[in-house]
Image 1 (cartoon, helix red, strand yellow):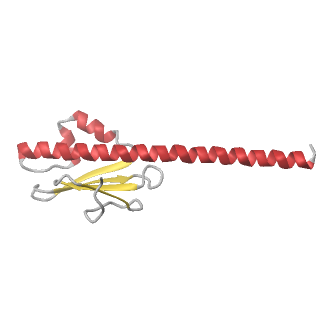
Image 2 (image 1 turned 60 degrees about the vertical axis):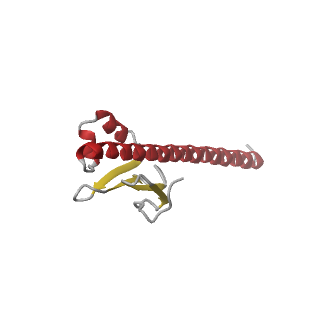
Image 3 (image 1 turned 180 degrees about the vertical axis):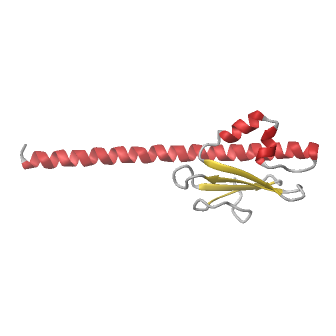
Length: 139
């Protein structure tokens, strides 16, 4: 193989490697977008479940308490790939904060979500930290 053929082979090899790596980036972006959409759906389900529970028991619950008697709700939370879901009721059970935070920032998601019993979801890229009420409302 002459030097020109070696250079051409090297250029082709780098071009193929770049194409493969670029394809991985596209796939990762699709995974992130899917995980983020799933996190919003789960957060919306949490808001609905908390409202329904409050109508009956007059207090808000943790995720574990919500899922205790509802296996379908528990499986929905488990299906929330790439995000950690958490609900923190106040001590008196009259209010709560709900969070959806990427498990591995940049790989499983970028946007963090926050909601309360008011039903408004806030969202922001927090670098993997929890979102809060100061973050913009999700439109």
